[in-house]
Image (cartoon, rainbow, N blue to C red):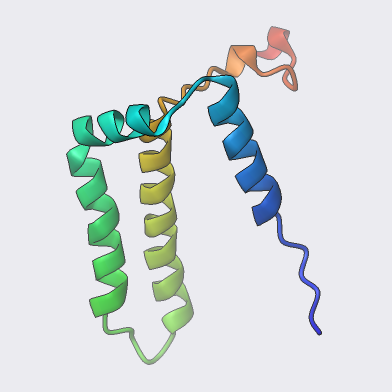
Length: 100
């Protein structure tokens, strides 16, 4: 058996805890998705570009890396908009406030 150090369980837990702390319900997410319909289409467009793409035969790694990077950015952006997530560097306690 292969054992891979995967952080997906921690990411899902953090996401649900964020939603729980900020009282984000499914109705809020649906309302936010309705207001950002073009971003939902952007995620679907990224998925379609991966499905219908013809990869180059010489070096497909970089090509697929770019495609999946764009998909990840689109999904991350949509999750941020759907949950109403905002991030301010000044609120992050890991940074020295004098450096900001």
